[in-house]
Image (cartoon, rainbow, N blue to C red):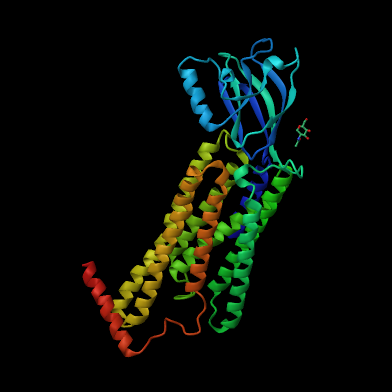
Amino acid sequence: MAAHFALFTITITLLIAVAVAEIRSTQIRSDSRSTIPFDEFGYTHIGRLNLTVTDISFSAQKTPLPQLGFFLCTLDAWVHVLEQLQEGEIHCPLESNLIKKVFTFDQLQPSAREFSNSFIVSDANQFTLAFANCMPNLEVSMNVHSVMYNFNPITGQLDFLSAGKTALPVIYLLFFIVYVLLGAVWIYTLYRKRLTVYKVHFFMLAVLILKALDLLCEVEDKSYIKRTGTAHGWDVLFYIFSFLKGITLFTLIVLIGTGWSFVKPYLQDKEKKVLMIVIPLQVVANVAQVVIDETGPFGESLYTWKQVFLLVDIVCCCAVLFPIMWSIKNLREAAKTDGKAAVNLMKLTLFRQYYIIVVCYIYFTRVVVYGLETITSYRYQWTSVVAAELATLAFYVFTGYNFRPKVHNPYFALDDEEEEAASEALKLEDEFEL
Ligand SMILES: *[C@@H]1O[C@H](CO)[C@@H](O)[C@H](O)[C@H]1NC(C)=O
């Protein structure tokens, strides 16, 4: 069944991933919106916007117009432009002195239906490319192709990644190296402790390898975009690995949470059900992520897909917590009946810690990272990536360390004294809970 899901997603991914990347093409059809945003880009200090617009047509016969045109504007300036419009100082964003006019349609040759323009941007800021239509009821159709990039005036090299993202290839490469080292340490551990290795330990290795491959594709994808502005096909591989990584990670959290192969060799029906909910939802989440990545910051269906992603993600995160809670409950009950208090207390502590760590990991990667993304300036967009990757790394290390194969299995009973102390501790806990 899992194989079917994987095939299904790969197909969907291939269908959707018509790589557009940082060079963007948009079709506008009979649109009468007064402003249409296209793309945004963080300029470092000197860069360009190359704009090519073809197949221009209007709903009514019009002579070339100064009230139609493309402009660049920062978010801060846009707030002031809106004020100016409201106070009646200007009647069209193109009249404002706060924007950079790129092309107005009165520059269009009579009866021409296309133009091409190159615009140099020499201040460091995050600019949004937008189209203003200040003719009421005039519908515009056109194909817009925009290329935005920075260039290094000394080496002459082009950089198609926005200011805050230009360091991403290096960052991903560093994390890739860290995961390769972790993988090596894990393989060595499995080899040394091969007598106490469970199936779940090999599963952990698979998760680690998929994470490393995912990062490697991310490095290649981002550095290719940096050099050429297009995504080339590495993005497809990247989506496949990040899909597999997502599924295996959630599965691993459920498996460890249920104590599978540590505590018992089988899964209960309700635990299987959790997996059957989480895996298909991960498929949906990944499809949503692909659409979000590929449509750019102003895509039409972006909002819907973001909602879908958020909803599915929240459901998955909640679902994986249930098996851990069931395990904790079972252990507490077992502690009262089977007389192996010390063993059960130890397991209980481990599962409780694991529960807290999973909650922290989910909270950090969803809420804190999103907060960072929102509040940091455009130049520091990479910080949220670093924060998310560090949290993920910490989670992998914690999980690996706490559930590593051990020569002295902690689940074996200890001496009587310790047994006594443990059952006292459990009793105390019961009293507090009552
Ligand atoms: C942008 O346009 C300029 C001027 O036409 C040209 O020299 C440059 O190569 C173009 N850049 C890209 C990446 O197409």
